[in-house]
Length: 78
Picture 1: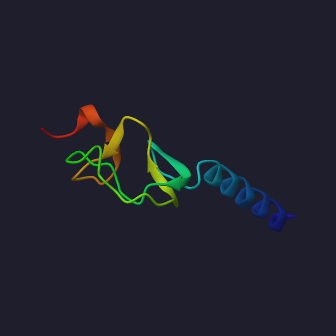
Picture 2 (picture 1 turned 90 degrees about the horizontal axis):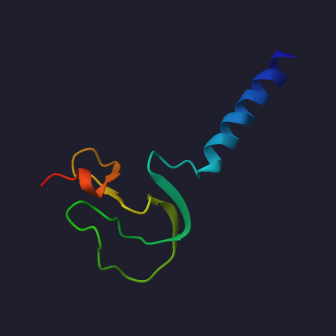
């Protein structure tokens, strides 16, 4: 019985994580994302056209230079 309960809890956690592809806050999973990251310094990077399944920042968000997390472009350092 304990094994079943532990299995059910693990399955629930996996389902929750996979719903967003295991991505972090302000990120979305994209089956055909760009291999180049949008950053505070370069919010519209020039990049090769190539599909890469990966997590990327939501629209309007970029990677912060210090935290390496997706932040609203308005919250980038000046």
